[in-house]
Amino acid sequence: MKSTFYLIVLSYFLFLISCNSKPKESNSNEILYSMEGKSSDGLQRMRSSRTEESIVWNGKNYHYVISCEPNDSLPKIKDESGDVFVDNIVTLSIKRNNNESFFDKTFIKQSFASVLDEKFLSYAMLEGMVFDKVTDEGVNFAASVSYPRSDLFVPVIITISSNGKMTIRKEVSLEENISSNLME
Image (cartoon, rainbow, N blue to C red; front, side):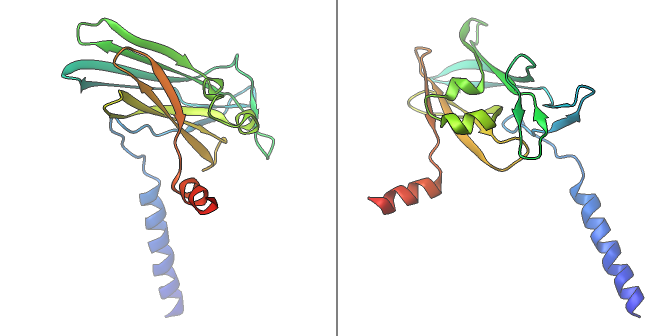
């Protein structure tokens, strides 16, 4: 009887594991980041990605494209276990409906040095970028700078104003907000 019970429990866990390992689907606002694994040169790279979508902003149509590519010319990142990662570049291009270029910029993690700690940047990589929302200030995109293969990341908000000017700010987490309010 005990062996039947253990067989049923084992089968149930195997079923759960197989269900959770199915690839996730993504929509245009979500990028599923994944590493390709070590290449023949021993370096780990993220898969290239490309997201594009049309949005309405101030009553006009715009089309954005975000591409994220590993770039071997950038300094490599080494994690605690000694694995070496290739950092990424992210290109954000926004065009008006008439295909006229409105904004075009390539980002590396150093693009966010004004809002992120230098020590954090030396061990982190630019993981990617996604469209966030349209606000009164402009169009917001969220970039993620993170330690490779970890949950430690800092979200950065890039706002493009109606005149094409860019501002960057670090997204304040709920924990940071609470701790700074407690210190006051």
